Amino acid sequence: MSSKTVMNVMLAFYMAIFFGFLFGPLIVMGVSAFNTSTYPQVYPIEGLTLSWFEKLLNDRDMVYGLKNSLWIGMWVVVVSVPLGLAAAMMMSQIYSKARSFYYVIVVSPVLTPGVIIGISTVVFWRDLTTATNSKFLYDGVFMAVLGQSSFISAYCMLMFMSRLNRFDRAQEEAGLDLGASQTQVFFHILLPFLRPAIFSSAVLAFLSSFENYNTTTFAILADKTLTTVLAGRVRQGTTPAISALAVLIIAVTVVGAIIYEIVKRREDRERQARLDAAHAAELRELESIEKATHHA
Image 1: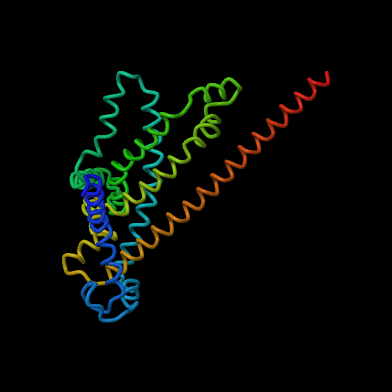
Image 2: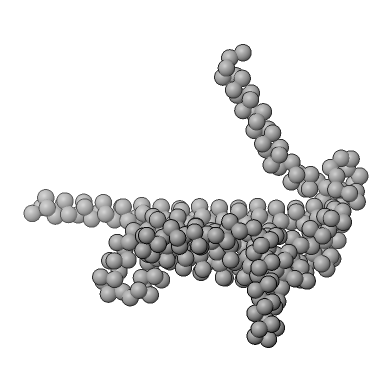
């Protein structure tokens, strides 16, 4: 047996273990969601049923937690994406000697444990509510949004920074030289360039908020999100209804990825068609110039 054959066998073995570890739990949950057994199991299959999906939809705590998670995730996107963009733009324009210090300050929430962020958020807004007698500030959803946004905005900033590093500042200077204002340059030159980063950071912010537990479990107070409800259910014992929820989340994720890929490929084809049309127009213009020169 040659060394190449041994290498191929080891690589195949490693890939089998890797994908088994990656997709094994998903397969178990997917099968157990349709099994009539009251405990999540793949074998033996006692029968096929959709009742666990029905029980999931009739679970008030689960549905309420899901609504809260979606609501909080939406507001986290609204808060984190503009903050991340502003921080990234400041990073690209700040004085070079202060850039390292500024970077440490902005990224520090990412390095802070979520438990500490959650507790400090509750303590700060509780004391502020007591001092100002503004009881509406001491709200679980409000504090969860601010607590999550404090570190998720740093993730958004890093994504915007990686995109801004490829931005040609000459485009801004050209726009200003042609009489455009700073606002027009921002909306007509910079934002179109940052559109992929805006979309990516919005998706990242929403998913990071949706699955967050450590910060949320303290900041949400007596309210509930999907992750806190699931954590309580798992401590009491799992049922196939949780597997049904996992199947729905996976299905939504896969459908979203497919739709995104279809839209992206369509945009790529349209962009390529525009480039081909522009190239063909240039060739026709060159041919016309050559003909005119030849006749002259």
